[in-house]
Length: 199
Image (cartoon, rainbow, N blue to C red; front, side, top):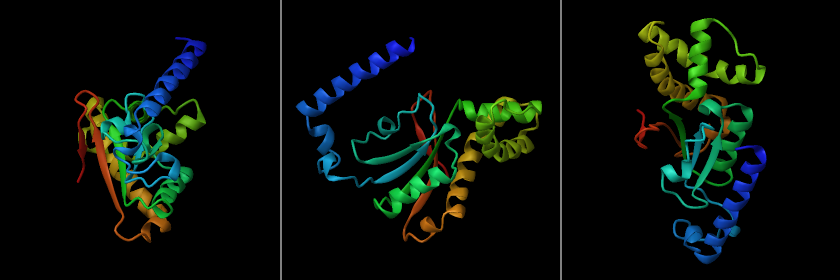
C-alpha cells in the first residue's frame, strides 16, 4: 500500500467511525457517562509502545475518554512524555499510570542487537531510544549470558517496564506530590492478547 492508498484508507475509516458515533452515541457515553465534548476525565494513563499491533483502548475494552494514551517506541520516557503524564494526573485527575511493554518488541530487539554486536544505531534519534532500553538489556545479559538473544529480549521487555516505572517517579516531583497515585508495569502478549500486570 503506497502513501496515497494509506491516506484514502484512513479517510474512509474515519468516515465510518463518525457515522457510527453519530448513529450510536453509546460509544461516547456507555463508559464515559458524559459527552466527549464536555472534556476529559480519564481513569488511567497508559504509556505504551508505538507498535501497530498494540491497540491500547481495545486491549482494555475502553471507550472514548477513558484512557490517556502516550505511545513511543520501546515505551520509554523523555521529558515530553513525562510532562504528558504529569498533565493527565495533575490536571485531568488520573490516579493510575500503566507502563505497557509487549512481546516481540522491535525497539527492545534493536537494543539487544546493538548490545551483542557492539554497533550503534545509525540514526541518533533511534540511538536515543535504544540508549534508554540498554540498562534493561545489560541486566538481561547478566542473567542469561550473551549466547541467548531470545531469552535476553524476553527478559529485557519486563526489566525495561520496571525501569521506566522507576524513572517516571524519580524524574517527576509533580507525580511524587500526588496522593494515592499508583504507577504499575504491565506486559502485553501479542500472540494471546493477554495483558499481565507485573509485581
